[in-house]
Amino acid sequence: MSLIAFGLNHKTAPVDVRERIAFGPERMSSALEGLIHGCGAKEAAIVSTCNRTEIYTRSECVRENLVEWLAAFHKLPPEAIAPYVYDHRDELAIRHLMRVACGLDSMVLGEPQILGQIKDAFTIAQDAQALGPVLSRLFQHTFSVAKQVRTDTQIGASPVSVAFAAVSLAKQIFGDLSQKTALLIGAGETIELCARHLQGSGLKQVIVANRSIDRAHHLAEQFGGLAIGLTDIPAHLHKADVVISSTASPLPVLGKGAVEQALKQRKRRPIFMVDIAVPRDIEPQVSDLQDVYLYTVDDLKTVIDEGQKSRAAAAEQAEEIISLQVGHFLEWVQLQTGAELIKSYRRQSEQSRDDVLFRAKALLAAGKSPEETLDYLAHTLTNRLIHHPTVVLREACATGDLTAVHAVQNVLGLGGDSPSS
Image (tube, rainbow, N blue to C red):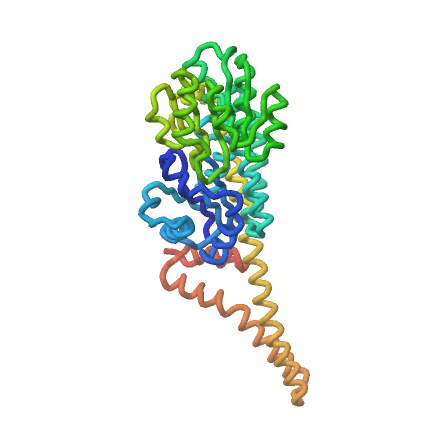
């Protein structure tokens, strides 16, 4: 039974592949149930964000099993995703989860949002009763490691994130943002971060569009902005110089036709657009229009790379902390393995005792003397308890396996010299 981290991310797969295997919140429970009952996983959790889809599981599944399950769940041929996936096991899986939680595997080095997303994945897996003792302990230990990294290093000191990169690009294109208007589509954490960065850059006006108008109002009022529903976007799009979108919609919320109409109303004044969502919120064909600068999360990578340099030293410290904590978790796993072996050995011994005792009582009931019955009990129980160690020791001596000989000596507490080679 292995601990497995399986999936793909922004390093291994382009956005058009990632968006096809993303798990929406409404499908997470059925996916976890499928992993447990359909794929034979003992424990499972799924982390699905715009930059990664990863399955964490304790299972005997091989890579091909997981590829086939993931492809079947999303109604894709296995070959559509097989070239992009990775498969980390045991120590490497533990290290991978800790690195992801600390932001060391993110597009933005050290970004904090991923930790919250992993905590959400943990809660969903708990609610679905898909976690057991090992994965549950691993996630909780990982949260402690991430907190230690945040506290003991400067990994989060620089204000670099996807949101920050999007706003930085807008400033590069427009220069002064003080007279510009931004349309933010969505009302989640990333959009809120964009709003904060835009406000910090002196942006004049913010319009927040969201499926839930109440959530749009809640965010917009923090920045003195206007809240609208998604269906109202075409009526307001022409006002926007900057459009940043990040929703969980499975289909685009902004199409080419609406953008064309907005450009006519703007008299060809350019619009800068960033689509952070996976699946994409803005139809890719929008990029074909003149006077539109459309960027996806993959396009932000160059901007993000420049800001990551300041976090390199902190990342090295974080890697040292993770290495230490991986060792600590492996020690815990080994202790659990030892505890299970002890329980199994005790159960086996107690079963032998009960079997022999039952037969001894039957002998007494049949009229055998107490002395004869005790002799039978002692002799039979001793033979049962020493039989397997004796077989192993005899085979080890016959083959010259001194490692096994010493192991049996230590386990049985035997003194004396072992056979020499």
